Length: 73
Image (cartoon, rainbow, N blue to C red):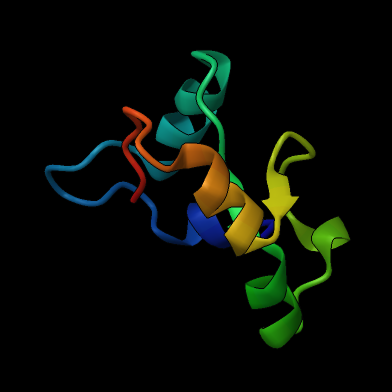
């Protein structure tokens, strides 16, 4: 959500979370959020910090990436 990454500041020994987020997107990475999780937490997609974040339901996402060579964390 807007302003949440900035709250972390610069954690000691870790990359700046805002720069890391932007670098991942600029390098072609994707940020994918679960639609149901957003609804359950009362988060409106308009409140997200970036319009490039994808929102999807978990089952279709899991079916799509089954067996893929992808890191998800």
